[in-house]
Image (tube, rainbow, N blue to C red; front, top):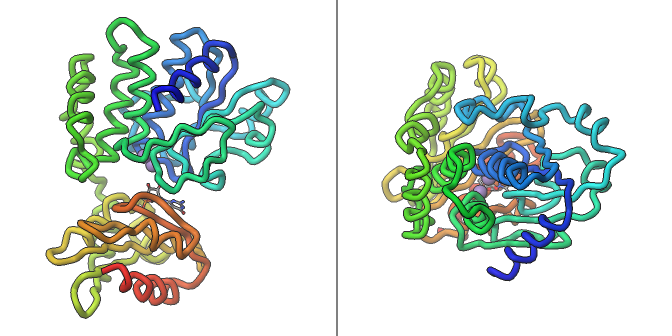
Length: 325
Ligand code: 5GP
Ligand code: MN
Ligand code: MN
């Protein structure tokens, strides 16, 4: 795999224009990796642009990703870049549908470099670096930074990388927390990163409105007869009532119940568009369950979008989940 990293570094060295993007509904790994890689390429004097979806940025404002540094307006980016030749680098995106970028800008790229850690990645790039044993894409980008920067890692790169790792390991609680991850985090702390601050921002605080929504969601909690599957839902009506659509962290409440193996959150995006978030504790491969509904992800964290009503989706996903416990 080291060979693939070298191959990509060679492409970076021999080209000048890059567009870096993450996945729809971006999380801390997506935003952190895009931020770190873009800053890394700029340090290397490359023309590097990034697109970050404005809707997902609020919880990560501490990274100081702003609209001067990155594009948050898809139309504006299109106007600016459409006449240029650029290499597209996609991060943390298991397939092309997950990539958060205007279709035309995907199509018009010279080629795609696909860097990811999802086992079920469809290898849609010309170059594909897929390392499923890495806790986060940020861990992979750290390896690029370590190869490409000979001196100490700059803080502006270290902080987003730590954010990606902390997000995807659930603040070092998930089973993807390897000794390698802890060593990298130690390095990032030596570069000035405040791990406590990041943990507090991502996992240790919640907005008032989001807590109201959490309460409404908790009231919907249900479980299978054997107690191994637990689920809750968030309807449009509940989001309206709480005045927020922030559902981060809700699915873990279902997963963390004693004796539960699979926790599920159903979010009603539209009347017939239900986002399903799946989490497991020890053995259920929820990426396979997600794949039954055209989704995907990791063995312990996966998702899909189902075009049925809320109740129909709950019925069919819970029924299908029973095979896995
Ligand atoms: P979340 O439940 O936090 O949205 O997603 C959990 C995991 O499942 C993430 O690793 C994410 O990449 C993956 N995931 C979520 N939704 C989808 C989807 O619709 N398709 C695919 N392929 N993966 C998804
Ligand atoms: Mn992600
Ligand atoms: Mn990730």
